[in-house]
Length: 214
Image 1 (spheres, rainbow, N blue to C red):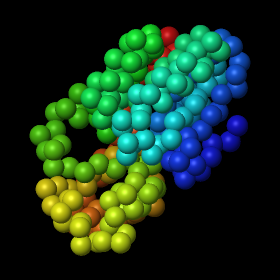
Image 2: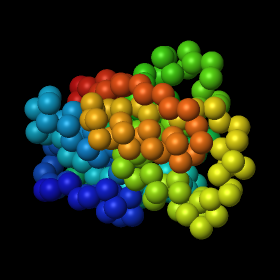
Image 3: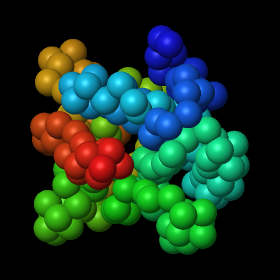
């Protein structure tokens, strides 16, 4: 099955399941779809299926726990195991508690910015609170996730109110792509922030998927 475009991943997610019993199902945020498929392909994990919830839940974390529960209940009779490719993602511990209740594992960490960099490495930064983070997906979907939801397309004067306490935009790159890097620099300029580039690759996401396949 072909991976849909970023807009579809944002609004609807994607179901790339083959409904073949005995496989591992990765239940993920739509913002991680490309990365998970790349890791799956590189490791030859043909027994792994993927289904993604809408990436826009990044903006509404209160929706994540209920949606994950519904997806697990929908698919658990078909798969030997389900792994949840979400970190806490703003759920305040509710997602972890629900996954424990359902008996499924999930990625460790507070959010994707942490596990992309590696949870230990991310925790070592002392400027995390004043850094605004983007991943490859969020660079591509910058207007959909930042500009439009915050109303900056209609009221650009609100920029400094929203971002005045930030000092820099950190672009965590999963792949080396000059065009994405250039776009990320433009994103930083649009927010009036200094720009920092960090090539993270897939970080702890790949390690977590290795665990899911044991």
